Length: 393
Image (cartoon, rainbow, N blue to C red; front, side, top):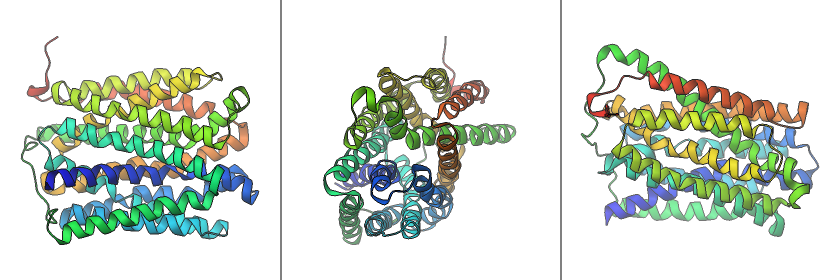
């Protein structure tokens, strides 16, 4: 019973975290019409929030290691819900920026606490991570779909308030399960990843993983931030899209591609995680070069494939980190990962806003992302393999 409940809350927490981190990119289209501010002005309001999604990962990881992963997830649900409700009641750019910043801070809790929770409570780690990661993509998809529908039919305020109420309720339920000891408050540690690399390889591994995590995060953030707007720019007239339809398209892309997490997780349990990680990056890089200049309906299918490969390599990445990290600092290591992945968000928000202001498009951002992923392919191939990972040709 405890394992099933823990799996439910870990997956739902992942869904809600990504939903709240993504809904503003659709809701902003409704605020743009209501407040009559430019897209660039309004997307900038998420700058501090996106920064805190990353920066908050270190203290969240430290508290998760020292206190409780499950306790931190309960706090996350409550904080996300209240912050989103406050966003819905915002009546100025300044108040909305403050509330979005609080939302970003509570978003930072999930990955260091939740991923470490999944790693330490599962037997087939790749499969468990893959299953859990599906809900990140589903969260982005549900966020885009629900916010597009709510903005068009009930206003942008409701698109913030309704998910906030649901998150508060989940936080209350999880707190009750912890209080009644249905879910364990204390942390557990697995011994599956006790075999660490040789001492001389650590520096090389650290540098390569820091660079790769940052660049993968950059590509993820560029796509998540700009995709609703690039569909609006390139396909609205061609397909007669409104905000709800754009939300539905983005939702479909992230929900379907999220399923690739599970496929990637199963593969990570059976094959070399290094090779899965490397070739997933190469495919993304090559497709991004094509995506950069595409302006017909195939753009949607190509976006789906790129996001799917971005998702499929995450179980391999998290297993690599688990192998490199001492058990007692696992949440901190995941915190470092996500401070890199999400702290790149403010730079992406800035670049997306400036790119749209200067060119009315995002062509160069996609091209740069493709170049980064292609170079990373060769860097990942140079990671030292453990004997158990060497595969016969």
